Image (tube, rainbow, N blue to C red; front, side):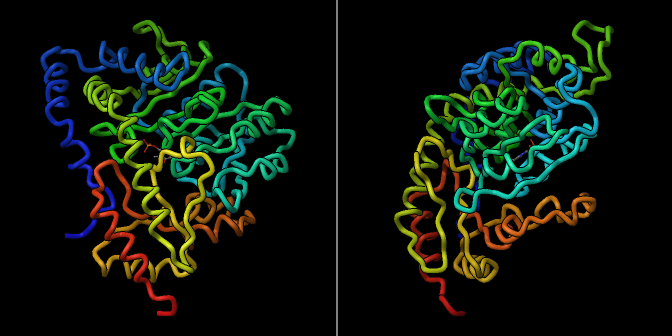
Length: 370
Ligand SMILES: *Cc1c(COP(=O)(O)O)cnc(C)c1O
């Protein structure tokens, strides 16, 4: 049998009994949207992140988008303003910006960490810049102290796309607690995954949290009174109940991911494979274990032939997508090279030691010249 990239059936089977009890509780309650499960999860997740407020929404893209929308309602951002964003990110980071009629300004990553390069961000700040959107790509925290210093100096908002980084820590602070606001995704494959779509905004800003709580519910805080032209993007009671179960095990899952990553980093020694670099273990929650290889496609075929599944995150950067033809001329050579070289190895909280060993052996057997 192949080593799967990620087996969600195994991931959730571990808690199946608890999940079923929680689902039954919601089914029997007769209350399915904006109820006690959501309120409890928002409380528990805010606590987990060490941030005052969490607002559950429909998915991670909406969480990001609603942060920007909330700041528009607060008068901190206007249409046409610029948001600095990593060129090498999942397209949702860009979509949230353009959905709000703001302008994404993509910057090149740090060549070692793949994360936002503060020097590149500083160079991209202009008169219309209002926000920096940091992405904790692959589960590794961006350089938040440098980015926070820049944001302070230039009076910019600092927003975290923490969709891949639940639980990552730096200086005792967790992902979501560094910026003015942060977006999380609970898509099933994320480190904290629901059994369907889900997302949350966390923020210490009470006014922003109130705006977003209204915006997700037709722009209404009191039934049939509409302060804003909102949308419908809520975290269902049943998903909140699933997430309350899974949140309890998140730290144990992260510990297992770190163990897998440690074994990969000790076991894979190949002249054509570059391993991810980690300075402090706690800063990385290994949503993805991403290696670089100049002959990436050949390596992926080789792994497949040896029964090891792998994926590419991501094959085409946003500025090279048809949807962003307007950014076609952006000069991002490093971003483009990364997209040609990256490969994600199997990673997850249920990946067995034997499976990890098979992945390492398959990597080591990759011929240098074939
Ligand atoms: C998954 C992801 C999103 C979007 O989350 P959804 O819940 O799928 O909408 C946004 N940004 C990043 C970096 C992601 O990995």
